[in-house]
Image 1 (tube, rainbow, N blue to C red):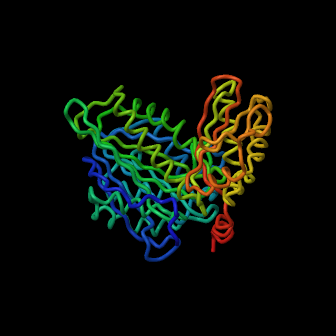
Image 2: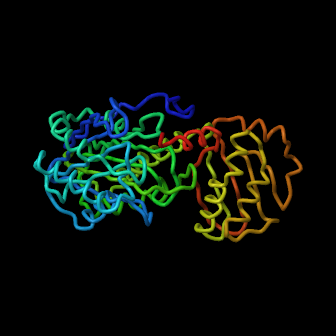
Image 3: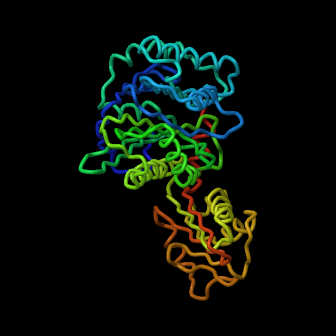
Length: 404
């Protein structure tokens, strides 16, 4: 598989997070001889929080995790993730698969079932061969190592062309606090929690309720502000574990909140950069809306528009498609107050193309790998920023053959 041209130069050097270990294995769920299952084990006392897809057809794994996090419990914790099969829309069989996986980890690792969290990603509607995963739990337990987070990142990939990782290390009161995270995501990406699996770990000390509030807050303007193809998955899961092993209480600490936000935003951007068939990373920044909600409607309509995205793929500065997206968004808009820019290039204002704009300048700008579309509605102070990518022939190729 060809790596996305927008991929980072290399996978980051993720630090060891004291209090959590990892292992990955090849269970043969969809393909033989490739890592497709990972197990993370967190020490007793770790806080675990998460946000999940709002899809009405979410998977049995997601429903199980949501139930468990609604009644937080204590003890060691485990996160078991497989790729190759989403265990979604598989009815009672899917629920049985989750129960078998949780029981297997509990029995083999001595962890309460209430503290075992699972996720599955891949093809929808096919029974998960959970027995293949259960057979690997002993191997995963014995191979646990604090240095294997990178292997875990590779084990959860599906159509991803590169593993995604991010880290931030900060100093609070003279002591180091580490954050490291991994993600998978490439297609079926749309804001509604967003479409991916994300696992973040920190040695910070913070209560579960405070951690949950923080991750829910940051999710709004990170993972919920990305879109590749406007489709929301059945399996979206973002989980964070805080082991507390640094001894640094970060409750209410702005530096920690900022660092966590930076890691989440970096991972969200990497998902877009790995959008199926993507060749352009696109920022849609909307200002001047009546409300933030209206600004988001415009940003979402623009970022999701197949016409806008294909024009960008073809390096065509067709700004009329942006006018179309604004008009269809449902937000309040006035043609004669609308301003559109490609980066710093003024394209249209006052209901008409700018007299200083040239097609050559627009076409030259569209040749860039990273593009910013600025839209000002001229109606108020509402703002919203979303990130997307272009829509190419390769997206069709990948998804037309996804199950084969």
